[in-house]
Length: 86
Image (cartoon, rainbow, N blue to C red; front, side):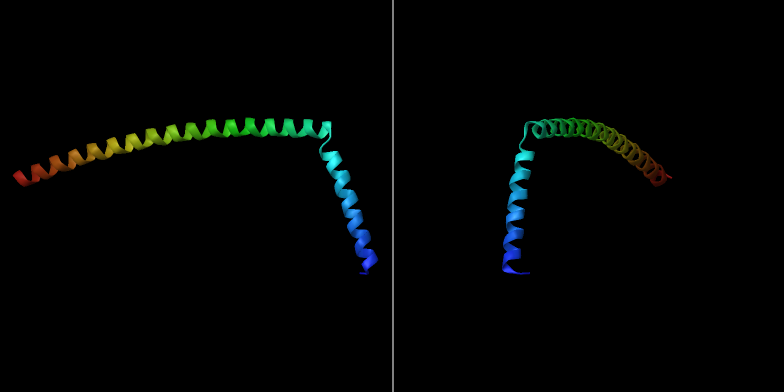
């Protein structure tokens, strides 16, 4: 590519970039960004609610598992004592 071609490419890119900035910073574009950001925030809130529900369920499962193990340990101890007495 020639030097003139490189300069033309650079100028074209700069012109496209500045036109793009005007388009992206326009009132309509700002409205789109605001609505998109609002939708993302709503989505984040819903995801966090779902995470809380899963965490609560996991906490309940953990508590149940600990209770099962405690009951099983008591039963094993009682069985051990009975077998030692026999």
